[in-house]
Amino acid sequence: MLNIVLHEPEMPANTGNIGRTCVAAGARLHLIEPLGFSLNEKMLKRAGLDYWDKLDVTVYNDYEDFLNRNPGAKIYMATTKAHHTYADVKYEDDCYIMFGKESAGIPEDILVDHEDTCIRIPMIGDIRSLNLSNSVAIVAYEALRQHGFENMSLSGELHKLHWK
Image 1: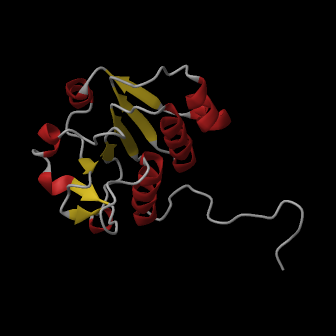
Image 2: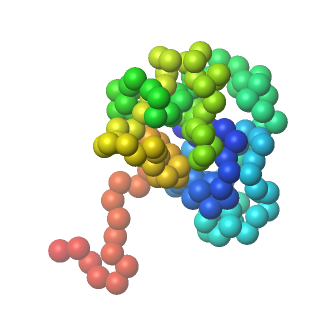
């Protein structure tokens, strides 16, 4: 199962969107405190729609708590500072993909020890970063694609009409 980790998320709407993506993807969400909002916040629930109660979410006191409770975890760290793109990686089935807070990303004192597992989303020019929830979706669905979208619906149906 894929694991999405948010290090000190700041925006409830982005976190709600990410929670919704996790439910759709069958992924677990890990939140590392401090959070820039309350888990009861209205914006979080609104962005997550009626999926939030279906979300497998764990909250950690800090990064050290996360490491202690997930010993041996293979962690990919999404950062604009990485040498490798997210598509260069072969994601393990139970890996963790960490994203930093919207304003600053993952702290460099964490990144410096994980140079080989840091990944980036390519961008043109001087753009600092993409929206956090968009970044999570891009990388998460690449990991899912590599595993053949296992246990996911691969076709859909029209609601009122039928395909020819």
